[in-house]
Image (cartoon, rainbow, N blue to C red; front, side):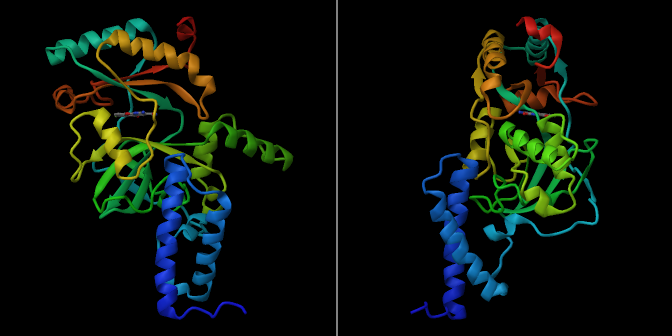
Length: 324
Ligand SMILES: NC(=O)c1cc2c(=O)c3cc(F)ccc3oc2nc1N
């Protein structure tokens, strides 16, 4: 006999249970890249939740996984002012530039400093605001002070949690990117449809986030790596390396290839290592970012008008580095 339809009380309880379970499985799959259940298990639970929400639309919540597919057609993107400016990075183009950076930093800091090295993901810089653990605003960098509100589009990016693991209020920043394979698939579809193809995954990600139809964004398989805590709230990390671990602990996706380097020689070895490995990565990188690890020293060094003095990006994208 068909199941008795659930009462509202039963449906409310069941929907809550399914949302928690589905969001947990989604976190494992999209944020940790370590799923513990097969897709069909997820799909069955998802269908069960969708049926309940279809029968009881009032039970739909903002953090329900069914809301990830989008469905809003936006009129445009409102402007957002970044309370904390979103800077860009100074670029280095050679081994000499990196060693000069180290010399400047040691001189300013008055001592040997350690560096946190990270891959420079080739995507679009984004800012994510959470209030009491809930995702409330996503924005582009724009000119560093004025960005665009792309919250509805970022809600369809599965690795961006709609709710953190802790009910804290923070602002974090990172990169939204399109994985290489998704880029190849998308361009194949576009070519078959007689549409223009995207030149590279970065343009494809930027073009996807500019879509006004959020259902289109949901289909683009965008992803993220977070790398900066702008407004710390109750977060306690005192170094960049620890901040990346803390971001991961509250449920945000961070890049696993980070490395703590005690000397600039170790930094250079890391740069050479990933200059070789970059073609094997499932996402594009356009270089390496080197950051003074200790936040106290970062604060001492501060920013110029356009960039932090305590970081430098080395770009793989130009000729001179080919001779690495
Ligand atoms: N594309 C990137 O993967 C990446 C980019 C930045 C920045 O743009 C950036 C800009 C700042 F003003 C300060 C720190 C930063 O750290 C960063 N770290 C990264 N890993």
